[in-house]
Length: 345
Image (tube, rainbow, N blue to C red):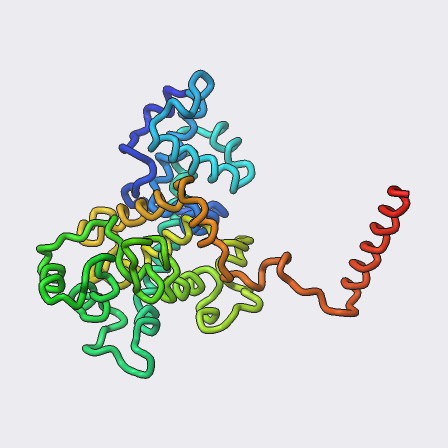
């Protein structure tokens, strides 16, 4: 496929923004892959544009280095390369395919990502009420599981969780301004629920960030299994992480879950890229910007070391004493020690 053919495809300002909704009619493994890719690598993406832009950029990079592209284009290309690496044979399929085939592949991946996001939005809308309910008490006034109209700053409980870090929800004027809309909350003004125990320290804004019990519960609900929220997962037979071989937390999956939880607490009923009330895209991108910043790698690495997948890490398993496996390991160790002794002598 030539650069001219690729350029003929309509392109938006960026592929890393949600595109118009389209239906992908056929079932394909790419749909399943798109579900996982959207959750763990990049969620709010226009996949047909990502692919067409990526193929064009590969041709341009024969004469131009990636560093000469804009920061947005470099990030987009990193996502494109991650998609290629995660699905064997995809690059060849794109290079050998027609413009129509490339768009079709993008629509299939997008169908999976959109479907996963819709499923998670639907389930979290209801179950999140169980997680935020005061222990041993009912939410007052009641919040409905199938309707979000009373959520957001309209309700005392959800409002207190959505209140931007640094603002005092208990201040009457602050609360009134948030409810009336006089205080406009942008997507990069992060809500207090992102912090452990809803405690924000302006002198140490990393302290407790993205470590709240609410986020951990939602993460387990989506990636391991709904039943793992209240207890450690043992088998994860049907969990999304298990199905896709996921054994560790990714920065994009943290941003994705935070975006889903934030939306579940707000009052809009439909997740939309044009919704200025939730500004979900800005929120997602702002978290991803921080988590992908190399200057923040120390804090990010500490954040990623968490016990969400205790049953899936072979490195952390304890071998049962006197088992066949333990005997094999002991014999191998003894042989290595004998070999080392002979070499050293």
